[in-house]
Length: 130
Image 1 (cartoon, rainbow, N blue to C red):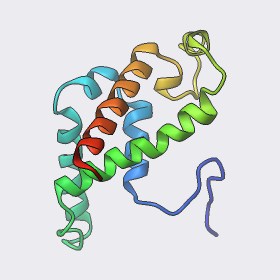
Image 2 (tube, rainbow, N blue to C red):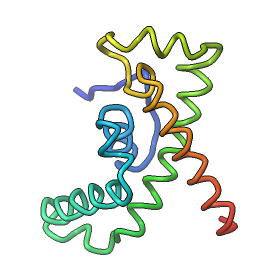
Image 3 (cartoon, rainbow, N blue to C red):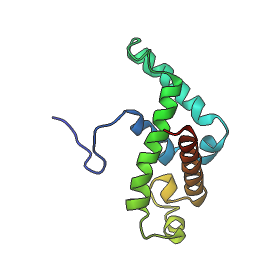
């Protein structure tokens, strides 16, 4: 038996799940603090390398951070083309007390942080000509 989440399927890197967990659930101060995402990814990478008995030793912090940023850009397509399409700020504000919504779909400061993070990430990739 193989469970399939039909809401979000596709071939991709495991970091997509990590990104989703952080972006959709972590408290805003944790995400917004300078360098905190890098610190969280560093902890994750150390655990990944331990759990795989070194099989992930070639996977660097820089690789993980790049893949995290790409995962955020990928996820943004779903957020803005599906979850928030045609919805205004009231949709987010009204969801503040609802369970089951991602943090960026129920908290305006969190959503604004996500937009800013995406903007900075896009600028970074554009500057590097990737």
